[in-house]
Length: 93
Image 1 (cartoon, rainbow, N blue to C red):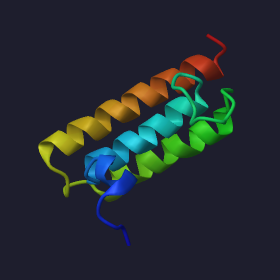
Image 2: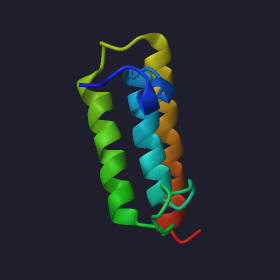
Image 3: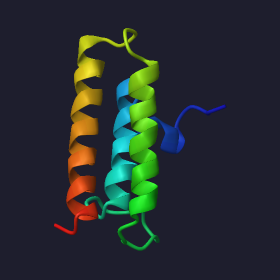
């Protein structure tokens, strides 16, 4: 699916941790905390943020007992961080 060289050579290895970080970044973009991709406008979108948080929570439930210690800690930290920021924005803080 991917060819050697080119833009693919600059991408990090895809593993569970990078997948989680990608989801976290998406949530933070929707929360207005992270920069959106070039060409997209920066705006808070709580419904999309909530959906991404729900996806991360679903992964947490479905992967229980199958993660390394580092993956479990990362997943827990990401969920805590995005939920906390979401709650602040949803309350209007």
